[in-house]
Image (cartoon, rainbow, N blue to C red; front, side, top):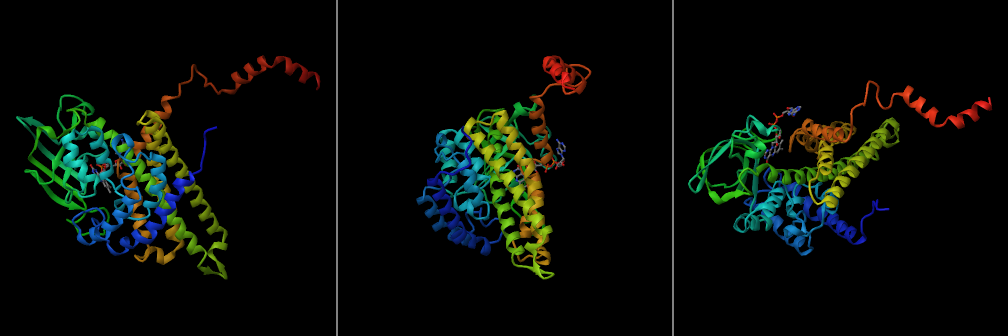
Length: 437
Ligand SMILES: Cc1cc2nc3c(=O)[nH]c(=O)nc-3n(C[C@H](O)[C@H](O)[C@H](O)COP(=O)(O)OP(=O)(O)OC[C@H]3O[C@@H](n4cnc5c(N)ncnc54)[C@H](O)[C@@H]3O)c2cc1C
């Protein structure tokens, strides 16, 4: 009997330590450094100064960059343990960086470790894992995101260099990254899944221009933000800066996106728990019509619904993580479950955060609680790493793959045939039963 919902005591002690450390040491940074790039840009002097001693403590505890498997030179915790860790780290904007496992650097490090040459690892992976530099993953284009077949950003090998022409959009952290992983079309004569490649482009490569920075939401002025609108106008990179083989771009990207999506889901569990904590504290503190909100059945229903949705979502995320650990690859079954949690995520977040906001009344609408920032995550989580519809299509295709059409005119569950067949099979018993009448 292998099903088990318990955490090993030794790892639970680590989780307890992480919980205390994040609450006492890391969350204060969230309150003070509130710029969009503060946790991610190593050149932000104030945040970098505040994070440096915390990063050293995390390293000394052996909890730095736990996302990498042992085969890739990491701790090899596996996804279930990482999921439990991320539930805590997800509460804080700074915590993933303090623990060396912030997106998009985690996924970038993973594919560099998996597909990079020794020279690429030395130049890009080592400083990235040490937390000295930031990186960017640039795939989406202004005219195409969810459907890669529409990508047009093109790279041609001319002599010893790749020459890139085209535009990219919403490339998070491009402005302050040291290098970008750019998905480009290298062979337009074949379907994109065979004709795309990933190039490593230094941020200061000639011909790479940031047209403007873009923010998600309304918090920043136009032109500011951490997502880059990029133009490659004959941008040149050395021939050896290809990650993997020419045409292998989608295989490389796929091995990164699965991890990215499940890590988002893990951190979202942390945000959901935070929203429920706030809901409960408010319900136990606010009085109306002579009693606490918590005493009202309509409030109790909200709390129960949030608890049920969070528990279901959390178990689903951990199940997907367990499957990854079991298969050690992004098999069909694993991809179905990752797509399922990715598709479920915005809806759970919407319901749980909305209940929390609503129960806080005007305070919930204000800029004086973390709730409105959580609310902004709802639509973001439905788009980032691909829209919900696309993930639902993946789930449905995988579910349908295991099913078959009716063999004839009537379905296999059509009752007249089934009853007749059951009566034939149980004729002797039926006769005895009729004799009793
Ligand atoms: C916060 C944030 C950070 C991001 N960071 C990065 C990054 O670092 N690098 C990067 O490359 N990209 C990044 N993105 C971009 C993201 O990957 C894309 O936004 C996403 O893939 C969707 O592409 P799109 O925006 O072009 O939307 P579209 O592809 O135009 O889709 C828009 C809508 O059309 C509908 N739709 C699309 N396809 C289908 C379908 N098959 N069936 C039914 N309906 C469909 C859906 O309603 C969908 O929401 C980021 C996005 C966000 C919000």
